Length: 274
Image 1 (cartoon, rainbow, N blue to C red):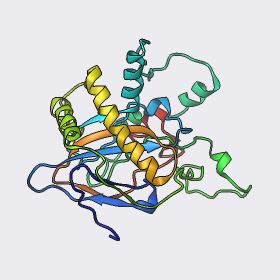
Image 2: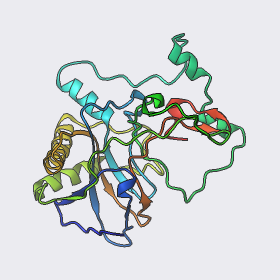
Image 3: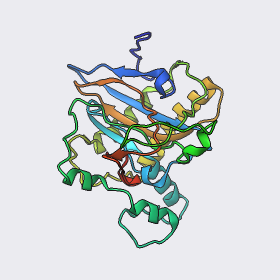
């Protein structure tokens, strides 16, 4: 590695999540360590509806609590006296628009698994992408040259990354001791291990818990915006108790246009799971 960090309580390091900042996390062999993770995006980037409920995690994440894009929308709607955001319907509702018609031609991940597909490599690192990349690959092509691809693979070029700066910056003294105790209490009440979930549904935050979680995550976002000199908005936040697995080298901002399985495109709602 070209850099190693062991941050003091309340401090952190910020970096873009593309392949220019491949990173790893050392597992915790003994003791107790909570990590506050905050993901941001440019304000003009919209998270697809199918990805708003996605919790970013890996096998080494351990027990954690997540503030997702859906949580932020729902809690803000309740606070403003509006209706709660509805979970996107995944079942076929019979819509005959062009988008839904094309989506029906794709294969679901469940169908792939039901056809005796090979089991995934247990040592492989699953994707943690929020799926915020543009889904119109034609707009990314700078010429009319024919793209050669292997049979069964995605016929589109990889989407471009949206990060402008690839520097790593330190964030000193972002959170106070009181802030850290507030995050610990939220984690203590709601933590779950998504590799082996205890809850059938993601626990809902109380109004005060959301205000605290969102406020402290925003403190980190503001510090990042100041350091990078650009406007950023909160995408998701998490408090995790890293386990002994840690995280192998990876890039968070894995962007893709589509997912394919044996020559057929997987349905959009199943892309992250696949």
